Image (tube, rainbow, N blue to C red; front, side, top):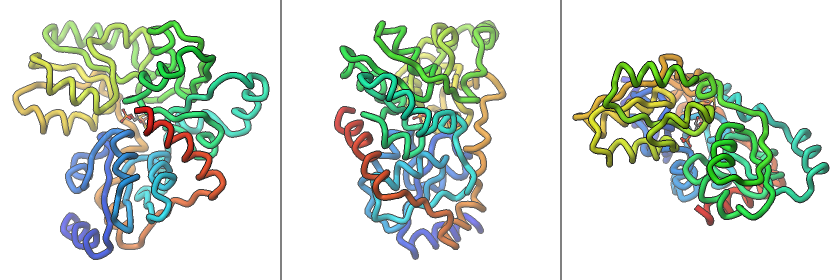
Amino acid sequence: MLKDEILRLKQAKDAVILAHFYQYPEVQDIADYVGDSLDLSRVAEKASAKIIVFCGVNFMAETAKILSPDKKVLLPAKDAGCPMAMMISKTKLLKYKEQHPNRKVICYVNSYADVKALSDVCVTSSNAEKIIMHFKDEKMLYIPDYNLGNYLKDRYQLDIDLWPGHCLVHNRLVEEDVLKMKALYPKAEVLIHPEAPLAVLKLADYVGSTRGILNRAKASCAKEFIIGTEEGILHPLRKENPDKEFYVLHPSMVCRNMKKTTLKEVYEALLNEQYEITIEEEIRLKAKQALDLMLELS
Ligand code: 13P
Ligand code: SF4
């Protein structure tokens, strides 16, 4: 069986498998660690195995390589990218920085290494609030997710310029989607990821990262939940809370890139040691400074 072969190869090659909450249930189930972007970067930083197999999208595997350069980091699905990360480039950011030299650049981890390398600090959806508040008296630029930046800008009335990037999965939500689901499940708590538009977030009972959503669902007395993030999160939610009901806010909440990794890709990644992440050392070192500051402040 594929699963047994994966476990055998993993041991034989001294590999560790990390998976994001948006992965297929069977991929999450064979992983050594399942988590949100922040959890997985912390695990990658401390990993002692020789190989890290990163079941997620490429910016996540890149983050692992930046933090753990001596490890071989493998992304099982070669073209699993994050469209949001492609909505900003090094050239565009350099141009902005020339025009606004005094703004601190706060960079969502959903970005590539060359963009992180030009940033002052990185954030994930788990620590963005804390880190942005650390710089609250400064002028900031938040890249590349408009919605997450706008949510914090609105909440704390901060001086933040916002980059016009977005997540294709969360940005398509509209208020109507929430109102319809609330009418169907009036007792349910509404938990939404901050990559959704502000008008949608204003209808939520809780706004937070994937880890935050899991923690909230566990701690809450409610028995039903409407979940405004990628459907992969339903797997750990149901596993951890068998007595509670979870409904995804909209059926289109599927990240095609996260779904490019199946057990077959994980098996082939281990067998052929593919696809290896490489980053130019000068870029890696600069990007690491922004990630190190994030880990220190979070
Ligand atoms: P989390 O850090 O909350 O897991 O989010 C990652 C992501 O890509 C959300 O779309
Ligand atoms: Fe990128 Fe959105 Fe997929 Fe997250 S859900 S990896 S932000 S496209």
